[in-house]
Length: 85
Image (cartoon, rainbow, N blue to C red):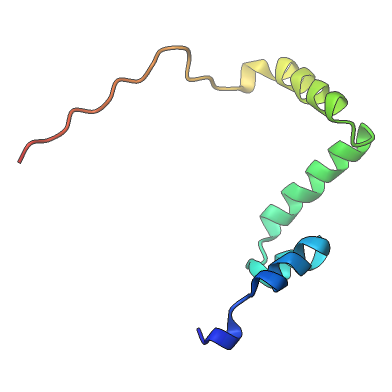
């Protein structure tokens, strides 16, 4: 990549001001990620973009779907033994 093709700090700052352009400027389009972001936005909008209500929404969802969630438990994982060559 030539120096003239690199994104400058000014380009990055401008992209932050206009997030709708940021994805196309810095990332390869990914339909799956776009769908996830759209759904997250819809969920947030459904509670008026209120952070406390959003957390409560996810807590209720977690409780309602608890039988489908996997937890690693409270046990601490033991470190792997290092191999000595």
